[in-house]
Length: 507
Image (cartoon, rainbow, N blue to C red; front, side, top):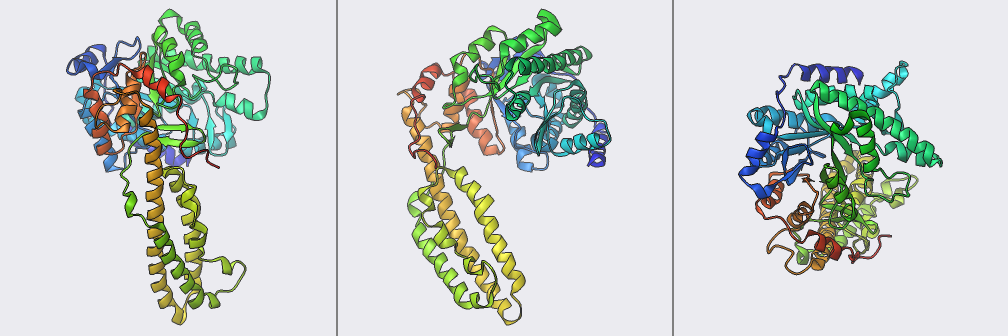
């Protein structure tokens, strides 16, 4: 793993880097073409598109992702957000390829990346360093596949790798990625001395900020900040992070001219806590705010996808599909069952009876997708593969024929359950739309467009980051760039605070 990481390091070092960085003049000139589409990024002097390209689930090996990013830039999106751990570096490599393609427009594009997570190949390197007695300092081994670190030594190593993957000489904004993992680890360990925990957390932040100020002076980054999921949390909770305290530390290491200028946090129509004070605090401090997760709300023990779904609804006949699957399973027991002996053999291929009634418990599409991919399909394939190995001789051919018929029947059931789950997701979406005040929703607008439009209209928000992995997502979301700012954002959020899950609580 270490050698593979080194080979990747050398490969990207050989690629030419794009010179320069985003400038006030170039971003202002871009914004003049469509003033309603751009916002100030705090006091950085930069203007950024009110919709940013979120790089969480994209990578350089997917041509559709490449085309989506290209079309977003061409549509006027100039805020590009990624992280060193997204798709194990693939997201940054995707950005790097397009930044080389748009090198003539480098001074218009504001590139944000984040460092902190130790996962994938970086985790392999961290473990290898431990084995040879050279561990990264202040490493937080939070869980088996996810460590965390913001020590300057780790930041220096990761920034160099990020710059190479991004093909950049200078990164516009570098964010510490969820430093609250240290606080979460302390909570997990049962450390109850809040003063001691906070003092150590401040020490780690201060050391990181001091190093980031040095990176600014070296020209490797322009600005820095923090991406945290707990900025707007309860102040009495150990894991909540404080913007005011971070600004104090930034002033301590950088004076009044410090470069802590950007923060990022999750917010959406149903999780709107930041609108109750955090956005005003950030604006007063001159800090730019990037919002992530605008289309996925985790509320009342369920996921509400703030988007529309193409449901066929009336064409679904789950009971008919289940009966067909049950007949195929009866055929298995009569034809092949007598030849299969052993513990648990009687329980093979009983999916029809196990799946009956599941539709009543599905909350949304992702709920079904998770069940199907993690439990149902693996169990099905395990049974099929086991019988594949057992069937030989005269039974091999009829088994193969039955297997094809059975898998087709199973697909019919799976498709019906997926369609019903999609309808449940649409019901959740409709329940949100119904609560929006009259006149606040644009006619014919998609829910994803409305969700982004409302957030972008909030005072203090610089850009709303959306995962636009497909060109059709880009077309949908970038339409918002042509709209006038939403003047009723706070009113919409207030009305949605009364939302309740129409499906009840997931058990």
